Image (tube, rainbow, N blue to C red; front, side, top):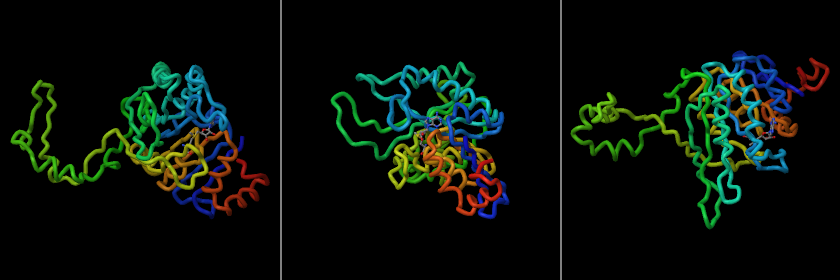
Length: 300
Ligand SMILES: C[S@@+](CC[C@H](N)C(=O)[O-])C[C@H]1O[C@@H](n2cnc3c(N)ncnc32)[C@H](O)[C@@H]1O
C-alpha cells in the first residue's frame, strides 16, 4: 500500500497544517491504519451491489451486508463521537423488484452500534432518459446519515438557502392565526409563527438535495457532483476538521475538502484513480520534493 501526504502549498509546509492523504489499497485493510476517533465526517459512495462488475468486481446483493460490515466497523472506530457518516447508495431492480440489501444494511449497521439519524434524497436533475413498462425513470439516490451519538456537530446556518419566491408568494397571504402564534391544536406544545419569517431572507433547507449528476470532464464513471460533498462538509464540519472518503474514486470529496480547508483522507483500490487524484491534488514540486526526501516514490 502506498500512502501519500500532500501539504497544501508547494513549499511543503501549509501554514494552516491542512493535509490530504491518499491510500492506494483495499479499504478493508487501509482503514486499520487510521487512528480511533480521528475523523469528523465520512462521505462516500461505495460500489453498489451488482454494478460496474467489469470495473471493480461487483458484490452480489445477498453478500453485500457481510462485505460492508467489516468496513462500517472500522468507520465506527475512526469516527469521532461528534462525527457523521453519509453513505450514498441505491438498490437496483432485480427481476422486476427492488433489491432489499440497503434496508438489510441499515438494520445490520444499527445492530453494529450506528444510529440511523436521517435519510437525505439526492434528486438527480439530469437522470437517465428512458421508458419502462412497469416503472418511471429513477431520479433519486439515498444519502443515509449515520451517527455514533445523538449529539453530533451540525452547523445548520452554513447551508441556509435564500427565501426566494416562497417569501413573496406564501407569506403575502398570511391568515390572522399565522400573524400571531398558532399553537398546536392537539396540545403537543409545538406551534408556528410564520410571520417570524417575514423579515428573513434565508431559510433552512429540506432533506432533498436537487443536484445534477457529474457530466464534466471527470475521468470516473460514478463521480459525485462537487456540490454533494460540499453541502455535507459545510453542514457537518468546520475548517481544520478531517473528512474521510474510503471509496474515493476520482477524489471529489478530497478536492472539495481541500478547497474548503479541511484535512482529508481518501482510499481507493484502483491505483489508476489514486494516481489521477495525486496528479490533481499534488503540485509537481511536491512529487519531486518527496522523492528527494525519501529516495522513493512519495512514500511515507
Ligand atoms: C462509486 S465509486 C466512487 C466515486 C467517487 N465518489 C467520485 O466522486 O469519484 C466507488 C469507488 O470505490 C472503489 N473501490 C471498490 N472497492 C473498493 C475497496 N474494497 N476498497 C477501496 N476502494 C474500493 C472503486 O475503485 C471506485 O473508484
